[in-house]
Image (cartoon, rainbow, N blue to C red; front, side, top):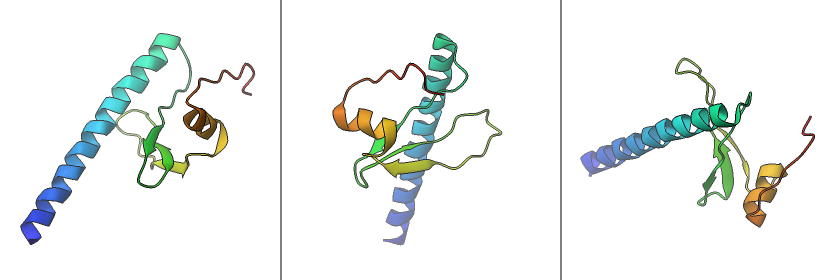
Length: 91
């Protein structure tokens, strides 16, 4: 049983690393495509009803994951309504 738990944990870690790698590639590619300073890809954690993202910098950047309720803020509105939202003057 102990080994089964260890195998399960290592499998989850491997999947997490794959998601992080794919997210990094997508965000960096999209940032270049639209020529913007910053870009974030929010993912939905249905088990906690939260949106989350890992800030994407270079491989030496160590910033923790950011999570918040899926109904909170602009990103929460977009996720809840499943619609795009263009904020013309976000600053």
